[in-house]
Image 1 (spheres, rainbow, N blue to C red):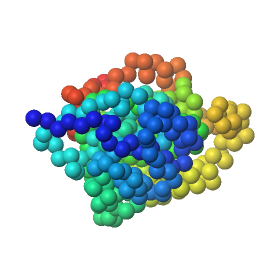
Image 2 (image 1 turned 120 degrees about the horizontal axis):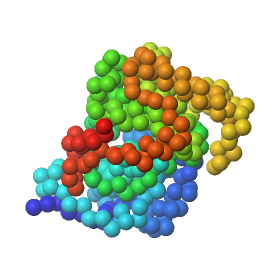
Image 3 (image 1 turned 30 degrees about the vertical axis):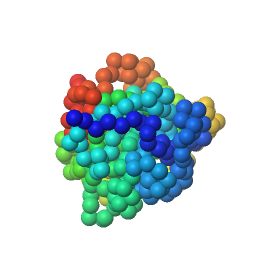
Image 4 (image 1 turned 135 degrees about the vertical axis):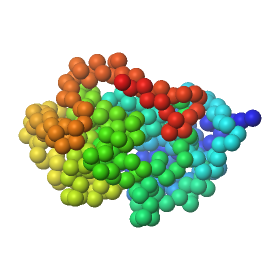
Length: 328
């Protein structure tokens, strides 16, 4: 016996906050899913998902993040789950393809949420201070059912700031265990797929638009969380307004004055300064934490993404903890 449902039977809700490509992506979604609903500008991940649950008229709903472009084939999917799955307390997660570094995993992917559970959960800004699992992510505190298919592409590099933020957040979160920071000496012993994804974020993507900003961001996030830990509250990674102020006031001014230009916005910066700082962070991370990262140029990044094989799934549906890592 099994539990089956059609994707088209549930509300599909576009969830955006301040993504610079949000309107373009929403227009694309509406062409593929004319009945899609939208939640925009709600501060805090917990509150934003509760707004989606409140808007939903079905007992489950599917979220499409603001930096996503979905594959139109997704709408015609039928999901077949084991009859013993506790769907009332589980998120069904499809992987997303990251346009910067080629990673395929849950970050930014499509998700199907149980409405009642979302309305009652307490995560991120609403998390109990004593619940380390729920401070900056959902996956450590909620059961995730990971589907084998990828039905969206994550374009989180439209601007330098967006690329930096994406990298910085993953540079922090991929280094956590159980949703909490670890002893820096034990960083290489965290969940193995997350560890290797962390290495990819800090190494690959210079060949893409604003890709170096994502690499710089991930290295800075890892450095601040594991080397400069006492100088900041790592939980601020969940606060997009804090991230924007940090980038605008403290980081970007260091790289002004150059001729490198973002093709999407016309924003300019000094490529050499950014590259130098990124390399310096990498050297400190390798020296202090002994992480296996490298300073790849554009050709090396393209090569990596051509030959890289994302983690192999064991079947049509597995839990995150069952994913077999086939990298290296």
